[in-house]
Length: 366
Ligand SMILES: [Zn+2]
Image 1 (cartoon, rainbow, N blue to C red):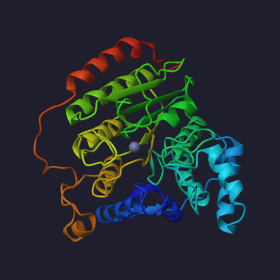
Image 2 (cartoon, helix red, strand yellow; image 1 turned 120 degrees about the horizontal axis):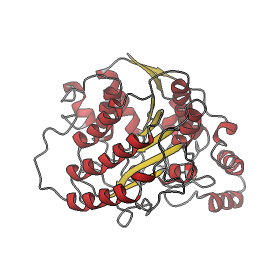
Image 3 (cartoon, rainbow, N blue to C red; image 1 turned 180 degrees about the vertical axis):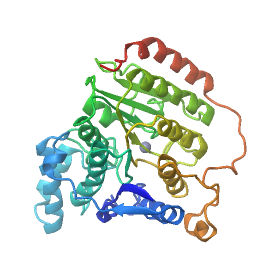
Image 4 (cartoon, helix red, strand yellow; image 1 turned 60 degrees about the vertical axis):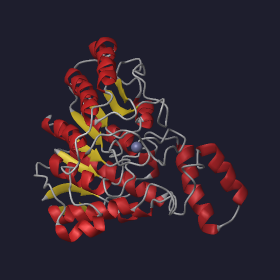
């Protein structure tokens, strides 16, 4: 039985529209596979309250998102909607949508209740509908309205003296970094594609924060899994130095070679290896979802991660009866042909810089 698994049904109303890459179907398929492979007690969390969201966001921004939902409901005052959208980043990749407020409170609620479970003694808890790591204090960004991983950190800090945020999404975890920058009790660590070739264009090694608690491992475009694993080893070294008491793990799956939005060539085995390394630390951990835009990869990778973090075996193959729905037969890419290594030397050079300019300065346990 997998305990402490929080998913609010309204999370799947979080949708910027049928042509947007962030599709609710990611969650439907994940739950289909997970239920088939394990017993999961899915808990419906209390949605986040505005006061809880305001632990990391400005109250004006929280109120604005609520007002946008009201305006869309009544269809009145389009001018006001335009003003709010312009001021708070609700355009481009993050347009206003009908359930923008209540579905955001739903996924944030899952992450908050998962973090509370870990704060109160659980070893593991899941909020797979969250992981929206780009949202800023007063602005939507990168498909993210509210920053639930940053809020998860806030809840863990109520009990634990030090917390690490680990982000394996292919995009830089810029929102979480920004919201916790310079706090010596919170280490944020992100491995992502090089900011010169991928949005949001941040996540350079030199972004350490004044407390040296911001770890960034950029990986060159086209890098293969061996290079990605080498980069992740720098995050493990940082954790060894920092010795966190608890972890928030963001499980973006878009470093996968089939992902349409990025350019790395890791596969599910590489990615799952990193999840195993975090599992082996044995620390109280809140696992949240994140990016990932290929519907054949996200469900199996999230399921594999949830099983791994629960100490359960990951089967090699998708059960026969689900292959048509999931459009894939293997869970961790055993069928993938070997390919020549790419990017390893560049990542080795990056790791050297981190070892010289950051690791020695990361604070240890108090
Ligand atoms: Zn991403």
